[in-house]
Image 1 (cartoon, rainbow, N blue to C red):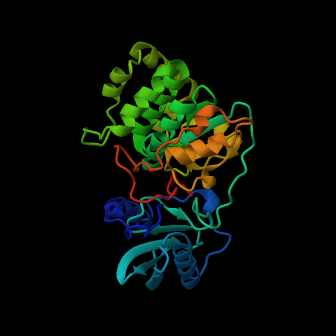
Image 2 (cartoon, rainbow, N blue to C red):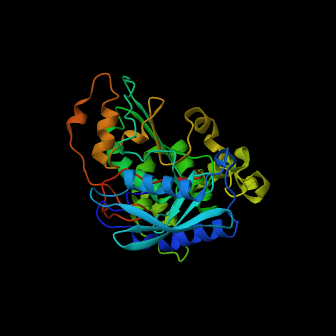
Length: 345
């Protein structure tokens, strides 16, 4: 859900992902979660206006204005053209005016939730602690979760001895069985071989997948990080059995809204912090995701350092202000906005 026109208008690279989402909505394949079902439906004019107003307020550069045309109802949604600088983009909005989809944006946007870093996002004054507790909740194959892990790693290297810092997992998956397997892998490395996690994640998040299905090169990274694989396999098997991860994946009646397999390994923490999607950043029991104006190592370092009762000397170290790109790889993102996530609403 990155801003559309901070540097470029809606990226064309998102078109394929968007087309899949839109098609699923169009043909009633995608089942909406119950918590976004309408109290009442809006008219087409109301829903489209709400969408365009949101785009203009949150997602466009100064001086650029979106309009709409050709609104109509199709298959239980409102379909319209979003017009930006004389170019038309296909757009959809649910009839209750809660979810918005547009060409080039790879996830649904909740029209009732301000984007992180926007004028309506409320900064959080972080509770201070002698040793801050930092939890970054992700889905391991979410492009924005990968971005958050790349942001996290330099800060972890700097502050790991001063703060309790870790990677945690959203209690459902949106990217298939590969994601569930990878969540288990990373969970167990952190649980039993934590000193190997950073090296593993640096390899996993930076390497562009070579497999045709986009699967991360985890096997190579396990070796590179020196992970004891027998110990890892035993942990994965025990965790899978305890939390019925594979069993729930195979039983679609357990899936969230019938669309997303559960991953309840850290379900208690998801409930405690009301985790909705990937990434969610919690410091000293507070969700600070909306306080990050950019997903750069320096921005994350600053907010963690603000959570110390007495800042350690390491906080004076300046980290990169560049925001990592979404997905795999080592590129820098074109935009400096802290927006975008994988979530059902």
